[in-house]
Image (cartoon, rainbow, N blue to C red):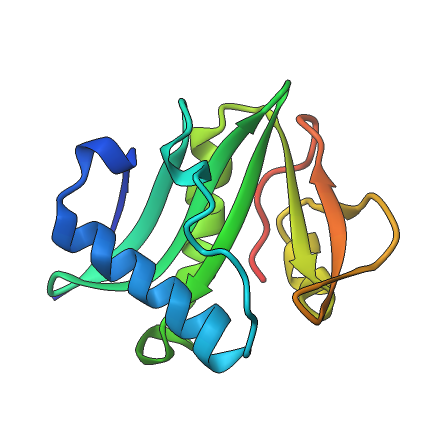
Length: 152
């Protein structure tokens, strides 16, 4: 089968889909990266929050979330399951997220080693490095005037 990209609010998705999305996030951030953090932070259920995911054969392979912050959108919780890596799914989700934000300014906190990857999508460093859950991150911004989406 082919990969399908879906988007939904938490309130409108089925419980098994939500469980699969949260499992990917916990597997990547907690188990693989060893981060001890509050995965269920309440932000997934904020008004306007959208979860985007890639699935194949009803299995969630990659996911991210989009939040509303003032006049910007925030992309976060970008994660791809080990079984989905190397297929460009993260890039597909980022491109999809950029499209559905309708030209809004987008912000994110990237793991520092992924700075160049996010630059391919028009994101620019917008602050100093900082540690989050023991991992070096950098704030990045994609202005509304950023060029068309690149290929990483």
